[in-house]
Length: 347
Ligand SMILES: [Zn+2]
Image (cartoon, rainbow, N blue to C red; front, side, top):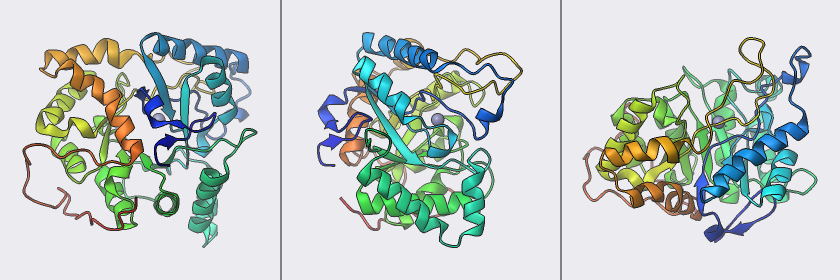
């Protein structure tokens, strides 16, 4: 990619990324959403309007870009992204990828179980999207999404991760992950073992864990770390997230941190009860509520600003986060006993 990055409406200069949220969703529809005929599904023009409203609020506050890493099988909607990007002038980056065993598409789980060549098939799909694009406009993804849930990685999750590694190495595209707040170190090991450099990987949703050793391990091995669910209180409190993030930054790992909210602007169908979508956290939450608390904890404003600007840019540029001034650990092993090989660095 060099100094350019793919967006839904074509490549832009990396310098145009500006202030960026790295994990928000214009829409999500879990597989089967369209079969819920009782639900009062939001009309498309209302979905567009809601996205435009939230994005204009971001623009009014100096944001330029967001990454919507919705995987292919839970309602990724490139036409919606394209329309919203055209209306707002906002940079919308998107992913190719598949979701996890629990909530991913049954099509893929059945294919993974029955087709001995499923891993290569998935890799070929990712590569074709990256090289040829998808949708009417031939939009090309900026990133590959992988996902795992709780417990051991399933067969489907494992081959989808391995396919993502193949596509990442073949195309030089970076990877972002979904975790249940655990096992990001195992994702990192699997991807690194297949030749993906750690600094091309964001281990997502690490703010769901209060294990500070886990956070440090991921950073120490060179990956970017997602504190990307601010405001989603079903997974952790913001108090814990702020305390853990502040501690991580004070350990010297601020350049490794990726910030977002995992907002879903339009959820397809009510997942709880019969009412329409519950109110979502607005994507200004970090700036309005979290940044002041980080400052109270002793983090300076320019360091917080860099989380939203310098870090996404450095990640997409393919640069390693600078190591902390003081190396807090001597061991090269992850806390679970695995070692991440420094193999296959491809730039
Ligand atoms: Zn998400």
